[in-house]
Image (cartoon, rainbow, N blue to C red):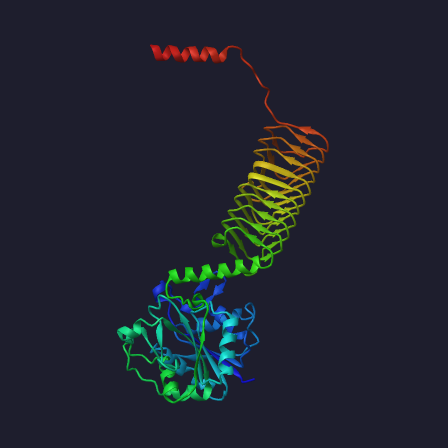
Length: 475
């Protein structure tokens, strides 16, 4: 098998994006663009990868060194070349020639701001190049709106590639050609060196254009091959924040496509975001407007009704997340029901068959099996025993202005509505708290505790008040 080396052009600025960093460090929803490209490059197991840097090169090198293991390319040697001035793509490749002087084989040329190229596409390019024993193989695509892409010019009879004409250099009839050059190449190393050295700036851009090596190969009678790309979205580059949005949309679409192929039902692919490290079991059902991020794990037969955001959260078998749930660093037990409109903050741990209802907020809260908080409550820094019932409007008063304290509610306890539990406080197993109470002392097991002023009833008071008010209005 002929050796491979890969050159990644990554010298550009993020000027048009309004960012003071190298363009390749702009973050997609799954990490900086450069990592996507290097991850794909590593998939074909090259002997080396040469990254051509320019603007703030030290930041690019630092980012690659720091996160190469996380993106799985730490075992491929990465070298760096420096492009002092941006004089075109040909000049960028020229900067890498010293790194390739002892290399003999096929050189793949990629772009650090084109993060959607699939490993399968790169492999297909290499296979086509080898099958046809080509000197140069380029990726092309047919599109109704080629606009800024260079056009692939072919011989009208043989259909052999003659050259690639940059859009700005096209004659009117050439501009109408629908086959576009994508800019990704497989090139024989023995041809690449002299071809790059021969480039000039005789073009509309007055730059050294990599596309000119195609015409040189054709003129010399070398074999020039093309791999026609089925889906042009892979070639989406990022020059603006709008382009970044398009890239993120495709990343999300691919993720959804992957999980659906594994048995996850997604109702609205366009509104669902699934992070790279999210794990979804077969049988999960996901409604619209759902965001799943971080190290989130969702087990089988979970239903997420819609408009949910889960970050670093574990959801166990058969749980039901109703509309409007947000959870972060939480554990949701089997067959537990959450929401609608519930907020599980970090440290929430819910057992099996727990119910957290509408407008309930939890934080560092442990609910044992079967415990319930159905309405309008804040439960922070607390432990709730099995089968305990928390009434509407209950608050664990966990902060005194200086420190956080814990509330413990025993198994089977009943907390009446509109109750304040002032921590630190313990409510015993089976105890009951009367509605409207403020509890500041521990409550024994099976006891009733309440703090409530005596109710008074003054006969006829309301009628007399109405009569007084009427008299005022009439006077």
